[in-house]
Length: 416
Image (cartoon, rainbow, N blue to C red; front, side):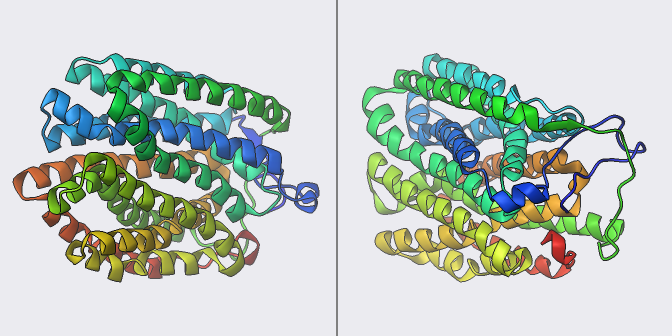
């Protein structure tokens, strides 16, 4: 795995192959920490802006008399564009890498925030959310590739650094909403367009570093490792990984989208206090996301996947029956455990299909977004017909899907 892998003519013609598997010299030099820091900070800024959408749901709900199903549709509009387009972007950049596409994509987020701040109709809110999702679709596949390229061979570590920025960015949304948007109203969302502008500048600089790393190669047949799983096992493993990501992401989405309403309805806390509790959960997610990658490098990704999915089950089952402060503690434990699987799942999938790196990254990031959006819409409809508490009682069983990990193959030693 220390040479670029290119695709046969039967799959792609004239691809641009990026050294997403670090060469020997890069491994000896170690990770490119400045690049990893830059892409992580960009991920932080990107996801901070995205998380504002869910954080201002209570404001939008009161201002426009929305029900939970309509709230779920806003999440779906945002997540659907990201889910639909990320694999397309990844497939295209497998053939022709676009080093400056990240900065250009961030412009979509910039305009989406401005539109959301000025929206006066529900349809305009949906369009604004979709524009922010479009920015995410462009950002994630190529930025994940850059993180791996700068990894120096420490793929799990690099993916965790990348995920850390995004997770902390997601956790900052509720805090910023509580401090800025709640006191100053919907129009204050426009202030966050300055964050998008800063991200554009950083991503443009990263694009200048990335451009010389791109090497064109003539198409050649992929030489499979003799111990690599068969194509049938690979297909099954990818389906299992999607199912595992489903269990993790849908549960996290249920808390991200409706935890504020759950705390307000059950414990009578204020909107601002509920946003702080949501921040605590999302911050724990960020820490767990960072720890999962290095642990996967050290002990194996399959072990981390086993522990992180099933390990959260006892705590998710207890959450619907806990008091306010116990719920806060449980949310921290759940966030730490369940989010540690993200890096391992993504890197495992990338190593299963190394010649489709961008597309696989796009599919899995896209599936994560898509599952979150579709799940939020379905759970919102369920909450309208039952209650928020019932939704969390149902979602508590999602980590049991982690039992499917038994069907994951053992990868050759040099790819794990």
